[in-house]
Image (tube, rainbow, N blue to C red; front, side, top):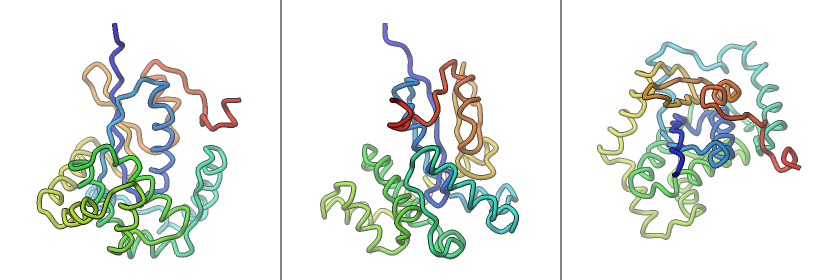
Length: 224
């Protein structure tokens, strides 16, 4: 008899580099932990505003710590993270609304591409220091994940649809209702109850809740 999959939701925004680490780790453990991993793209700015939280980059001591912390995580998980040349511009000026609407549209029209689409946005913003807001950038992301010209144009046209705007708002509100105050938010469902974990450093506790084994970063090197 097949063993039921363990349902885990990941609420994330590609503007959050910590979300990228959480995303990649859960993807690596998806088969190992027999996860039904459900991607929940949301809008981080909405969560921050509703919770009254402040971006850590606005607190000088936190910003200094976060710079080194992200580098440690990069080395530990072997994820190609690099600091952008102007992180304040990336996070506080340009933002991620168009990108998250595009990912939301893909979750409805091309759910099989959400993982790669999200990863490509992180690669652009947090590895190659490239834009994720301009239409040309969104076109490049769509083509990178294999969408043809017609599907790309169709998906881009959905960014302005009220249905997509409402879906992104609804997912963001769901995260807020669960107690979100930042990203990523990982929600494990056990015995019909949701269990919330914030950040990308609670995998040991998540494993304990799920009754599985945490085996570290699961990089190629760690599996030798």
